[in-house]
Length: 258
Image (cartoon, rainbow, N blue to C red; front, side, top):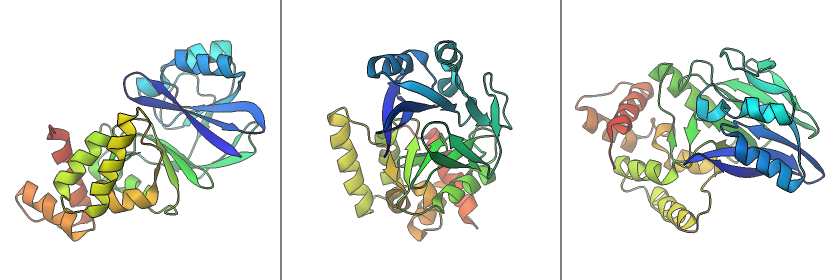
């Protein structure tokens, strides 16, 4: 059985360790910091089988060099980005076989947050990096709004029971903003209450199920009339497509101080 362990890093990052109940091998996803990963490997008697990288930002790759110095392993990362340590560059629709885990992941290119951002999709989960967060999505730094909306839409087309393993604990802030967009969304209200309780106990709010994102995440709901109406009211003019709605909401969130 495959299991995911969240390793907190920095102030709000999660480094995910993918392992199996039948052996010590683990795969580290986006290890931005070496210290907590090395501690987990040492304290739990684990063996690093591979590293998966979704994009080049420092808080996702900063620990790779130090980790590899202690635990040499293959490093998979987006072929369209230059990342030190990557010796297994991956492209869209490539299948990645994770050593020691009997697990195969499909690569999806999801540009927008960065130019070459990728996600890794398993049988019932996806490692999505900074593309989709619980209740939100990543900022558009290197791509375009059109690219980011297409990437989010691509992930939203996965089976609704898919678990999204994102890389940050941004959920409460994201859901507060979502409630500004859709204050009457009952599913969203309940989700905010549940997430608040989890954080009060210092527990992660992720992974999240895609079905919940489709019901509550405004960036995955740009085709919904109530979301479009809120975006138009904020923009002050009509919006002609879900992509324009997405761009308006992303710009709104960028300047929001909730």
